[in-house]
Image 1 (spheres, rainbow, N blue to C red):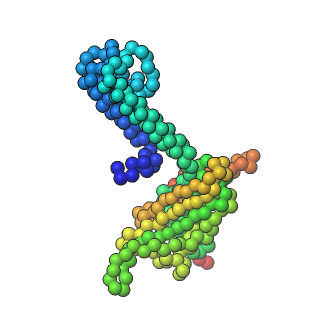
Image 2: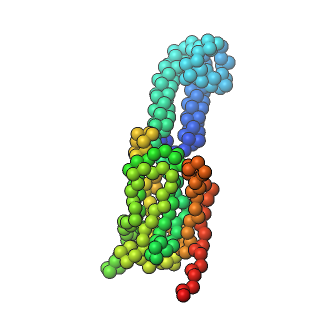
Image 3: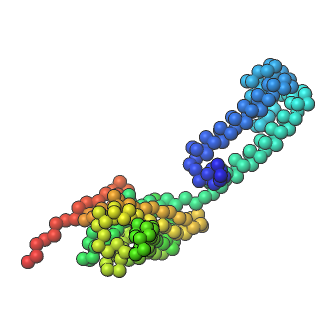
Length: 269
């Protein structure tokens, strides 16, 4: 309630519509009761809430069927107040609906798990990103940050945020999928990390995506995070890109989050 406008903009459509319906019915119920108490509506049954309610609906919707009309000064005053309220309510609803429709939606999906597997002999953290719209997102950029609990030499507990470099953090044209990779070498803040260590430090990997949607002509944003339980060691993602006979590519999103164990290594010699 401290920022109700932001709540309405950020909430889901069913919640927004429910708020609109609730406000509309509540306001008409209030004015309907006042009309019933005033008894100043022609052709309405005296003290009848139902007649007052429906007269209020007609007034707020500027319908004016003509069967019920205000006939007293109190009723005319209530109609004036309700007319001003209905204009303000309609303006607010129109603005909110337009604002929600005009907001750019990033149909960018992230794999629900990240994996750690060798890549060219180096343990590598990997996760997937895909563009569900299959349109052009230019100048796409990924930024990865590790958040973990640490204790300083002075004994202070803090939540440290450390940027994690990716092998490729930009894509000039993001259309299909993108497997982000971070090498767990000696320069990595995750060097030597294990599942137990990540859980002990309550580590979380925060991923933010930024890109320019060429269709919407707007910058879009998306974010996701991985906690220790969502980082699988010695697993790899299954292949999801299929090349058709005509040369076009198809993404199987049913396998987007699927992983498989690493194949056993052949014995040396």
